[in-house]
Length: 447
Image (cartoon, rainbow, N blue to C red):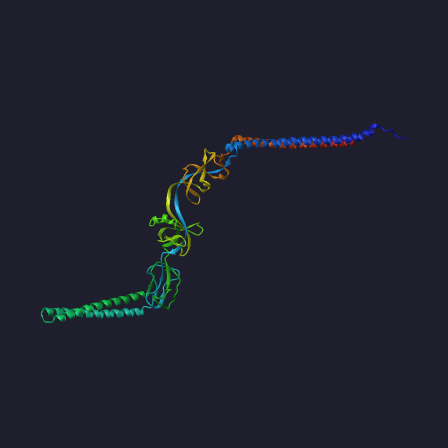
């Protein structure tokens, strides 16, 4: 006999399934609600901050249309500005001499070392002097003989004059003797000249240095016959102190340089990298014509070269100081800008406004530029960030810090965001735990 079916046994499984679905939906709804609350709390701070930034942006720009740009400034100051001429120069010796013997003979000795420094008058070489000594002896003997004849002729002339006074001799004999005396005087003079020439040639057998400087490599050895017609000579001496630097001046700068020729203008010689000064000197000379091929005029500067830092045929960078502009108004080169209407600078007004000021530029150095008109010493000009501003724009300086109120609001905003993040995390965790418990309860009821 079958057991009777009751209504409660059929409804119970359906009721359990509905309870599980209801709990899951409720848990999902609670999690969504808590997530939305957390998003609202975390996004409200940045939204408020963005509105404040927008308000500050509108208030900081020109007429409320842009932000206040951060710029760098510098103060226009007065300085002595040197007017210089830079050129590429070639070191040239003040004097170069090829040492040649003045008499012909066998080279007997070489008394110098190649490359050594020599002084003017120093003996460099010795030529065999024996033939010149004999020539000197011969000239001296001839002179002595003629001098003796002259002395005898003078004594004879005195006797003739005494006899003429006594009317014991003819006047013609006296005149003939007087002419002989004069003839012998001329002969003695010639003999003395010949003797001097022989003595001079004997002295030329010692080859002397005509100038002081550095002697080059020897071009002839001992035992060779040398003479005054040898093109190479015995050696070449180059004067190193003082020494010159030859450089080209553009013809456009000649009117500025020519009136100051003869004045003391300082010159500096730099190495090829312009990193160190090799020597200091002065302007020396200016050529008298323009080179038609290059459009330049050659000039020279002279240096003492006490440290032997300059060497002949060396290339150097020369800087010549023409004059000095006293109390010139100068600003950094980054402050000067160029526009369609000319040069201008941005002047800082009241510490917060940039004002465009047309100026007239003058000379420029590596980091400074002269302002001839339009700017006074002591005014502040903008050197950085000028490409982001216009005339009348509001600016701020890197040294200006935000106010205490702004810092406090910033700290409060950061603290609120941290609290909101914590609350959102806690709420999400609670909702998840609540949903898990409802599912467990529903599962137990189904079982």
